[in-house]
Length: 167
Length: 93
Image 1 (cartoon, chains in turn purple, brown):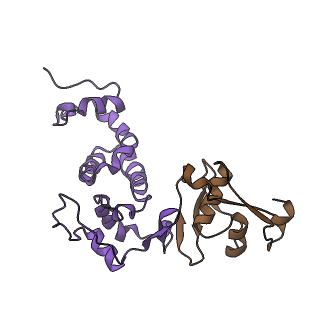
Image 2 (cartoon, rainbow over the protein chains, first blue to last red; image 1 turned 90 degrees about the horizontal axis):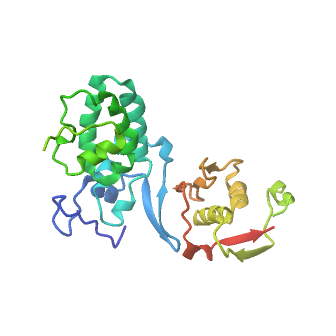
Image 3 (cartoon, rainbow over the protein chains, first blue to last red; image 1 turned 60 degrees about the vertical axis):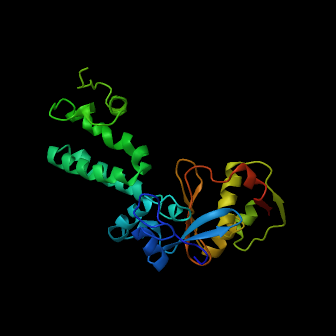
């Protein structure tokens, strides 16, 4: 990594010219089992360990930290399998139980995950449909939350949803 | 590529040409060459494996082990852009 200075992204709290996120620090220290390689065909990530055997208990929080990074080459380093792996667990172990308590706990976790950026957007259609079974529980905010596209996004995934906002 | 080449574990190519347009075969050759091999035959010779890890939907190569034993992972969809197609070497046996 000689010649590279990993700079914290705007809003990450880092000073210009300073590596800030834990992901940056761990990568510079060589803690990750991967490395970015450059060749005539572009950049490629070489993994020292097979991704299927990766200890996600150890690495998952670090890779998620890296999802916030927008500076190349850092943003290229997080594995493409992290989020799909999470989504599988979210669906099969939590949401499919249809237990109110479990689903609510998972939703609270998802609220934190979406703060990591747009990386989860492609998976909304996998995660949100289960909430159809709860739509008639009128104690929730529905599209009353402070998000201008809330109604259209909910309607897309829950077609029978009706707005709780009254003009 | 002749059937005999597949049976002979030490086959060497007789000629090489550059790909003219993208095809599924060119895509896989691109992936093998990115990992440092000529093609699937050389990979199987070097790594002594029978099966290559592929994406079930597209049949594209999914994972390869390089000569330094690190791993390259490839996307389910096309990775070889049009501007890279002419760099892909197609070997004839």
